[in-house]
Amino acid sequence: MHIVLIGAGIMSATLGALLKKLQPDANITIFERLDMIAGESTDAMNNAGTGHSAFCELNYTPQKEDGSIEISKAIKIASSFEVSKEFWAYLIREKNIKHPEAFIHRVPHISFVWGDDNVTYLRKRYEAMRLHPLFEEMEYTEDWDTLVEWMPLVMHDRNRSERVAATRMAIGTDVNFGNLTRSIFTYLESLDGVNVHLNTEVRDLERFDQKGWHITTQDLKTGKKGHFNADFVFIGAGGGALPLLEKSDIEEAEGYGGFPISGQWLVCNKPEIIQQHHAKVYGKASVGAPPMSVPHLDTRIIDGKQALLFGPFAGFSTKFLKNGSFWDLPASIEWANIFPMLAAGWHNLSLTKYLIQQVTQSSEDRLAALRDYLPDAQMDDWDLAYAGQRVQVIKKDDEEIGVLEFGTELVAAADGSLAALLGASPGASTAVTAMIDVLKKCFKTEMQSAEWKSMLKKMVPSHGAVLSKANRIAFTREVRQKELGL
Image (cartoon, rainbow, N blue to C red; front, side, top):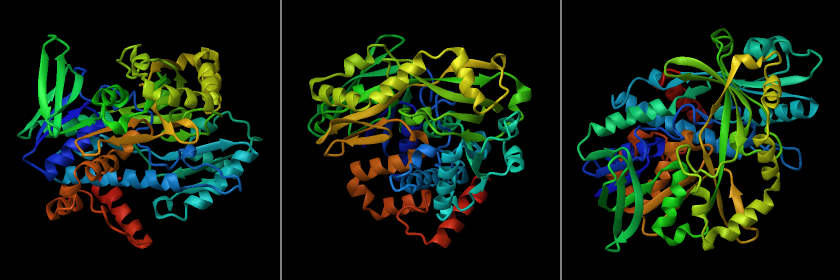
């Protein structure tokens, strides 16, 4: 079997590793338009989450009309992140990738709010979540001294008359998906039958002999064209996935569109400030804000050094990739998706208003937002840096014609010969679950075989298992602590 993976990010890395474990004789060819692995959305400075586990992201736990808190999405995302950690632990045990300290570190996840209504909401959220095994270690406090202990910079110079509250998951993590992806690719390239082509752009996809695909590529350095045939194609090109999916002309892709959103970070340039903060502190998003724009004061480990970021601030660009073209959005508009895109725009006027406000922000506006989290912040201590591009999914809807989806969407051909992953958050953290979904849709016969079932169980022990609450707690702790050293 010849498999083609488009894009050298975390999704292709994960799917490639899974497939080579399940079918070692498979030939895998990977195309990447940049001159490096994980240079777009997967890169540490471009990825908005670095470890979405739903511990602190308040947009995953909305308050319903009756005042109760909906936690089903948080459970789904947290469960997916645990699956990812199981697979990474397996790769480490097998010595396929480097030690966990190369890409994953313990960083507490904190939700922080102020004001009576928000404090009431956070307490309700805590009371709902702590009953689930995945969140049993969550802590809640309104005590000022405890908050100072958890996040001294955030509490410094804050008005003590202000009502504030926070939850903390001390077992939260920071994941450098760029490093992880490069480690997995190093492993893949050591295997027979795996070929990686950098500086190579996929220009066209066409049905080949009714069973597979003919792929036309171009070397971006030499201009030379290449031609490849594949039995299965996965489009994991981040924001570049939609244009390639449209080129495939599969019926399942009809009506999909994309809305690009760019981002910016404030990056702290003072080591003495960076060292005083060790947490991911998330607040509540502004009305109309997309999920990737939930404000957070974020400790990250990048190239072995601790960094401190605040943001992201959203923006608008017609590019689908950070290194893309301003023609990406116009070129993606087709007769089949123009009405869903217009309808989605009409139904999301608050998002349009929010983006306009974000684009027109001054440095003083960004400083004011930062001071909600660091009351004594000074602009000289922070530099502005560009984050990656995200393309939110727009798809047909029977009732509203078109809807904007804040998440990821798997689109697959009916015969299982092609699949594409569209969308953004929570993205990288759920890569293993997303790629197992690709296997379920596109390798249905193989997934029923005893060999594949056994190997999947070895790689992801919880796969297909129904765990009791006690077993889930024990199993989760074993993976977090024993396997990954967390």
